[in-house]
Image (cartoon, rainbow, N blue to C red):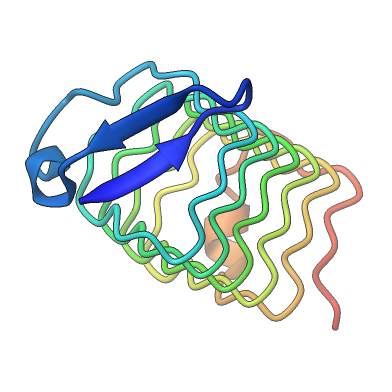
Length: 138
């Protein structure tokens, strides 16, 4: 069982395996949530609000993060391989050392995002919607 709290302190309890394959989190408001190292691989997380969330070191591989808000989120060291981040908003997000290998970034907004030491190609970044002041050098 995984227990976590939303930004206003109200508890929300989920059975970890019960979420796998579920659409229960589509469109959820999880801003400021603290879920470091959680396994959300292959999850349908479309339109979830992860604004200012702590997802450091989490497994988001293969997750559908289309139109998800990750503004100012801490995603440092997260596994985002093969994730779909199309039209996601990552303004000011910390993606240091994140693995974005094979991730789909079409029209995503990465303004002022920190991608230092992240695994991401120039080809992938060529598909983003906006990346003004993107940080890439260590």
